[in-house]
Image 1 (cartoon, rainbow, N blue to C red):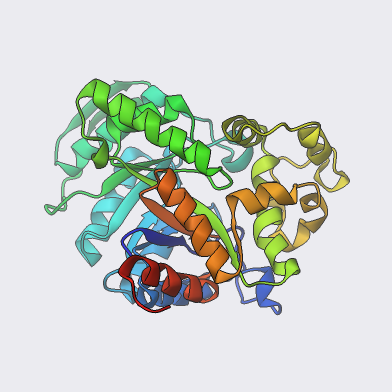
Image 2 (cartoon, one colour):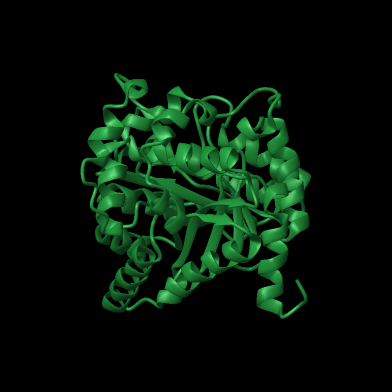
Length: 358
């Protein structure tokens, strides 16, 4: 198993049937096969970004777990306001009870533009994590605070094995990093960060752990990286530039990425927001499939993608992954492309760490 290499599966909007052109999307059923292949290639775990349509987390993750035996699975992210805490706790408890302790609960504070749900505060995040852990321990929870009000809630039938880990899915700023250091077992960053930005997250987490007397090694940093290995220009732009549109089109993400990466937008945000295709669109991610976003994608600078994504030959992609590991990421999660497209990269990454012939 590749201890430090994972993958996202069925990224972006889903199709109910496989597309005629496989470069333009992925179906839910293909995602089940992708989980089997991801396990055979040695990926440590597979993450799912939930959506309120064809990507309900419990259904998809249960399918992945049923088709595999070793592969860890996780949400990356499950929006905190999307469920009563009893349902969130039940998801983790049920997956562990049914398939063994292979589940990671990745929680996101969410943004209204994407999910249509209110963003929760950092105190609410910390309290919500505490509520979930108490429910897993079998406690009766009375709570009235930033995370809501709950009177005498509990899981009457509980899983008695090791509880799932809880990770914070975050953009990568100092407040989020410190909150995660106080309450979570790990973090999942946003794609399109530079190695320097990942290094800052590592430093902020380590500093907060030192302040509260926690071992920084207890907080695992996972960084998703869009990968386009030996692909033509069309598919590379679908995976990298078109996917980046769905992040940069949301002001909260765009402002954070520009700030954390130290990029001078120089009118970039205005050019993207003013693109005729995005006029009046609340969320490009919810409104379009990646194949429909090549127009706005032309606004995304190539240099930004080359600096933050794994693009090109297997050797070039290995070097990119190594840069992020050196910056402080404990785990990398290939994003956007599917496992078959990353088989050569997984093999080369294993050879790099084991000394085997590539």
